[in-house]
View 1 (cartoon, rainbow, N blue to C red):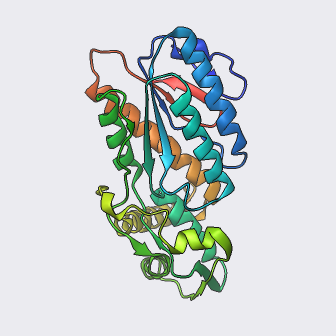
View 2 (view 1 turned 120 degrees about the horizontal axis):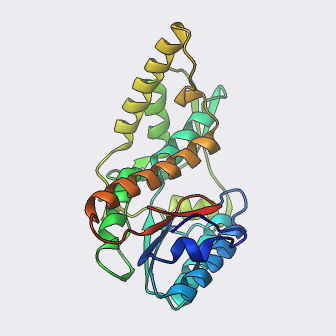
Amino acid sequence: MGTGDLRTGAGLPRAVSDASVIIHCATDVLVPRRDLAGTRALVEAARRVGQPHLVYISIVGIEEVPLPYHRIKLEVERYVQACGLPWTILRTTQFHNLVFELIRASARLPIMLLPASTSCQPVDVRDVASRVAALVGSGSAGRVPDLGGPQVLPAVDLAYDYLQVFERRRIVLPVRIPGKIGRGYRNGGHLTPEHADGRRSFPQLLAGRVAEAHTDALRCERGETGLSVDASPWLPRYRLERRQLIADLVTILTRETAGSPRPAVTGTERSLCPT
């Protein structure tokens, strides 16, 4: 097995040649249309070498909140279901770091604008990795129960929690999002309170970020180099969290599949690699 490019298809047949399971986590948040093309290239390569089990990671509520990115995710889901390979689709709620970075970005202004009457249910990527690892060993299962974070929390409350732990003062202003997208969020279409199975909460994430920020401050005082978590651009941090999902998957799968063939994992919007 090797590394393949989902954008061009180069190297994909070799990358999936020995895989009995393919875990498809790759996405391109800047050019979502690439997700569908990349999935097609992946499936075509997989068909040429056999019938591996395709596990796809999707998003809760993509029918209820009609963002352009969500529409593409729904198209990819439908393609996976009809592609002819054994398949499993797991939908998750918002990753911790995505919510954190959006709140942090809003705190750059004196007035934090937050969606009114909207809650979030952030989930830790380690909890997602554990669920996916369990799915790998259970065979093709179709649409499995969603995975949500352990708490459903109003976005405004998350902002106040952020300000408190980082000792900042801002005015928090709830703003009503218009149209079908705003209505979908206010109705909780992106939430799955009946599947609040994640273990690590958003307040735990905040505590960890504060500890990291304090460590970075000490390093700066000593003249050491290093990028503070709280100073990094949100999109690279979101990509780093997706890479962390892949790293956690590899760790868990290596431990739990010792002595047997391990899955291939799509880890970025560009590549597929074996575990």
